[in-house]
Amino acid sequence: MLDDTIVAIATANGIGSISIVRLSGSNSLKIALQISKRTSLTPRYATLSKLYDFSDELIDESLLIYFKNPYSFTGEDIVEFQCHGGITISALVLEACIKNGARLANPGEFSKRAFLNGKIDLTQAQAISKMIEAKSEDAVKLLARQLKGELKEFIEDIRKDLLFMLAYTEVNIDYAEEDLPSDIFEQINQKLVKISKNLTNTLEASKQREGLIDGFKVAIIGKPNVGKSSLLNKLLNFNRAIVSDIAGTTRDTIEESIKIGTHIIKIIDTAGIRQTNEAIEKIGIEKSIQAVNEADLIIALFDGSRKFDNEDNQILELLKNNDKEQIIVITKDDLEVKLENSHLLTFNSELLKLNTKKEIRPLIGKIENILNQNTLSSDIMLISKNQVDEVAQTLYNINQANKPLQTGELEFFAHHINEALQHISNITRPYEHDQMLDIMFGEFCLGK
Ligand SMILES: Nc1nc2c(ncn2[C@@H]2O[C@H](COP(=O)(O)OP(=O)(O)OP(=O)(O)O)[C@@H](O)[C@H]2O)c(=O)[nH]1
Ligand SMILES: [Mg+2]
Image 1 (tube, helix red, strand yellow):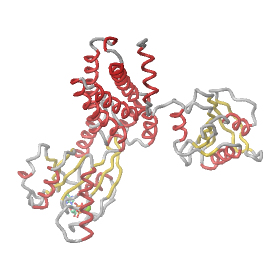
Image 2 (cartoon, protein in one colour):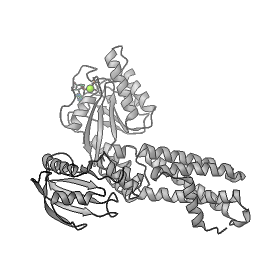
Image 3 (cartoon, helix red, strand yellow):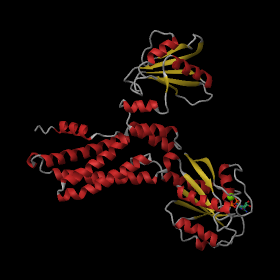
Image 4 (tube, helix red, strand yellow):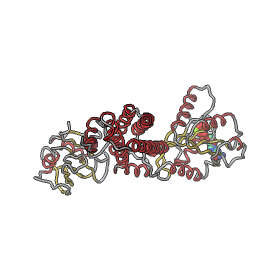
């Protein structure tokens, strides 16, 4: 039900100097006046006021801000209570609101109302939820662009072009051709080519930077005993993983978060990969391979103090068979060199020699460079799987529409454009065909 009034604690649940309780809905002002025993609140003014519970006992003195509809985040009447911090005071204010008729909001319900009231579209709603969990400064900046409406405008432009094509094609199918501009199909063709190019770029840019929003994953791999766990510990600056000279020490993947440059990344230490009949080690090795598949960047370790062997070769094969970013490291640089580099020189990337007991700054620098390459650009970016899927479907239909346009099979062409329109609209605001055609026909003013 949209006309009930919802309430929630908007700030994180914990100790802090202020916590905010937020009401939204038609009874927000009435409830706030009851709790504060005031007769009015001026919209957009901060009013210092005492607050009382249902049995008239004083619970806090807080700042109240009233946002009158439609000039609020949700488009409804909103009142925010900026109470003193901590868990207890905000819980008391929340309870007072509920006793006075508000309902506890469901997760995301404020944003949902903003969407339903047309204050934000789906791209902006998604940007808000991702922003809260953003793992890097670049991700925040990108999401801020999206919140401002960058993706929304990009999609809107494509939508308008598709609608233009569809409207003219349907008119052409249904009415006489002489009413239409003579170069209409050339115009449509040009728009089609432009959209296809833009969407292809967007998909590619988004795939390259997949880890930007959810945090990049970096997997450390290598045969047993090369020094993977030693490297993890060094990166974390504490002894997180057991290190020993027994091959097969790490049995399970170990995931930790660290900050490199402006990025919070997930670093994964894996079980050494080798042939084994040992059941548990086998499961661990399967998880290592899974970590390789899920990672954005692979750090592959080779032991400089041992000769290149079959186990190293297995790691090389893994690297050759995927297109992830890779850093090749030769470990134990302090010991006598026995590894023949020739096996590793098949790779384009330079070999980084490391002694994990000493300095690993060159490696950190290299990781940071790779992460930076995969971050901000002026390209339009998609931030979720559903956006990527919908754009891919749109692009598919745009490309399918090309042939029937050339051969004059306008029904087929219209079918694909219509499909494209449905998919692109799912990103911002699901679309209803009849309604939109009415609008477009009105706008085109064919006057017939
Ligand atoms: N001299 C030297 N020894 C190292 C270096 N890095 C690691 N080691 C030693 O190599 C041995 C294996 O190190 P780990 O970090 O446990 O190796 P791992 O790759 O995690 O091994 P598994 O978990 O068994 O796959 C330990 O005895 C480490 O102390 C290094 O840079 N120099
Ligand atoms: Mg280990």
